[in-house]
Length: 124
Image (cartoon, rainbow, N blue to C red; front, side, top):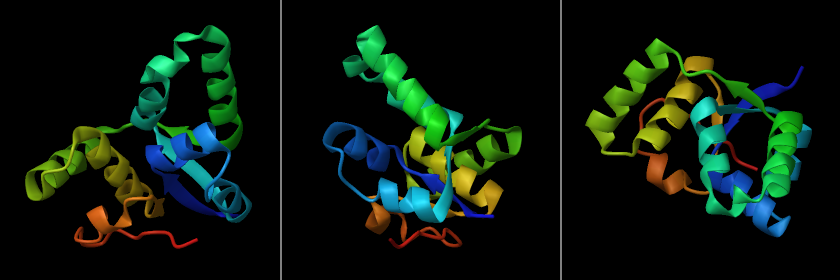
């Protein structure tokens, strides 16, 4: 069984836009998860106003990622992270998903998150 990893929106969008990045390596090594809020972020782009493109992204996401619901405990942890570190709600929910599932974060913004005690960053 593969180890779980939570994937940041930026890693996914980089791959969708360029076909490059660490996502294929991550898929080989990890079971990739995103919180439902990341799924919303992906579909919120004006790029996806085209129904065919939006459906392709939804199919891609459903094939390669498990989408985790945001629980009350995760929401509470996100609030704590916002208070302590001044990060955005979407980032806080992403990190709260890592803590709730006791898994690493795959992100292009590791330096932004290294100050957060207990957060494990994936290294690919």
